[in-house]
Image (cartoon, rainbow, N blue to C red; front, side, top):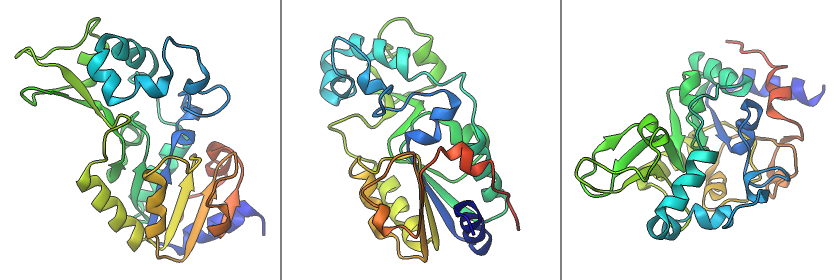
Length: 241
């Protein structure tokens, strides 16, 4: 039995699957990841992307932040790929209970998935830091200047920047769904970003599967490791009852 067949068998036997995903889920939709050779962190800017995407930089150099943000993180015209679609079908069958994602691009929701836990927030929610008024993503990306609220307050994307903590409610629900799952599929993540990667330690179920192009620090704990693109893997699987 090859690895794809093993994965298919695990999925068929499970009715409580959680998918934990990172940037590799979206790269096949044309979104660059952060840490690969051709990722955002290896492009040239006046400041390193890690500095730009920090809370301090957002507050002190807001105009520069928004230049980068609009240039690199606008995914409004990006469509979901086979991975997003397969996971949505798994959820429709009642087998997939939740998606935990480190991505902020909104592609899981665009594909129709209902239970998506956004560890790092989303570009689709934006709030005035003064009065908390909500603004959609189009308002942010179509605005040429630093986006301001009607009240004059600064509008901030509801994404978790460096130096910021994760949302407590999202963390609690993430721990809950992972600890209750019997199959945890980890895909498209180096498992190098903390605290996100540490949530895997709460898994108490039967099988862990890791699908990633490169090795991860958690490979030795997995029951199945597939070093390949997610699209290559999910395109060979079928959603059975």
